[in-house]
Amino acid sequence: MTIATPAPDALRTLAHAHLPADLADRWAGLLRPAAHLRRAHAGDPVVGRLGGLPRLPEGTEWPVWEGHGPLGFVAAVDCAALPTGELDIPLPTDGWLAFFYYGDEDDDALVDSADPDTWAGARVIHLPPESAEAPERPAPAGLTPYPAVPLTVRMEPSAPDFASLALKQAAFGPSDLPDAFERALWDHQSGAAHQIGGHAQCVQDAVEIEVAHGALGGDVPWRDPRIEEEAQRWVLLAQFDSDEDADMMWGDAGALYWLIRPDDLAAGRFEAAMFTWQCG
Image (cartoon, rainbow, N blue to C red; front, side, top):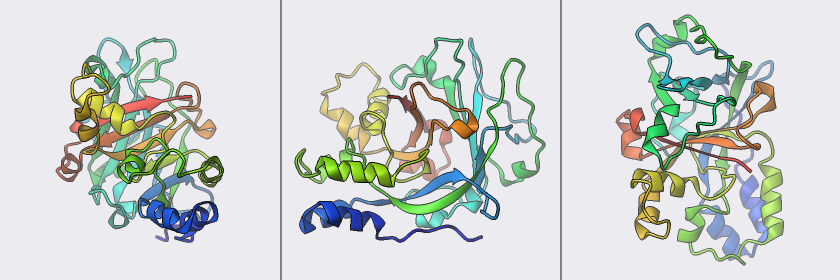
């Protein structure tokens, strides 16, 4: 299977067009590989899908948030079809990752990374390779599936978001990255931002900070230095943007994020992943 790979220096060229050479090189050194997921068209290799119905093997229950209801099926990706060796996170090399989220618009309940009582409202499950042959599981009563959208993958470097801890740790100041550069990056990254690995494309502040705050108990003051220390231990597993094709709208054009510690990912402890979401 051929994976689409754009010119590797596109972001570096963009940086050198807007920044002094030394800053451009330093910024480009922060780029990380990511598997960008986009709607598959005729002839594209399919590596997963948004929406539709999941293929759950016998004995795997459809995730439910007790007291609220079944979670919506957001996406599934085939780890064996992804170029896992090109990523810098220890993603499984086989099986499927299935993502579920409780997005009932008639229920005011929200999944909050700072409130453990809500964490059951978002799940990621690593399914065995043979689940590809399992029949599609009918949606639980009362749950309308999202329209199915096949996904292909494009390997491309991912840039640190302007709220990213990576920029702070690399000692970039507010005046180092001008507005014109930010707008150029925005134009470069246009389109629904579905992604495996790499830097998260945040709608608001750094998602690592939100997850770290929740991991430390949720009642830790936001200025506590432990939050930033904890944030450095988490990496983006996946993000799924609002997408008109799949009739997915997370709040006001928001995005869903799953993060995990690399050692938990390497050990297959997907129950240790944490979820957050942001919207405009």
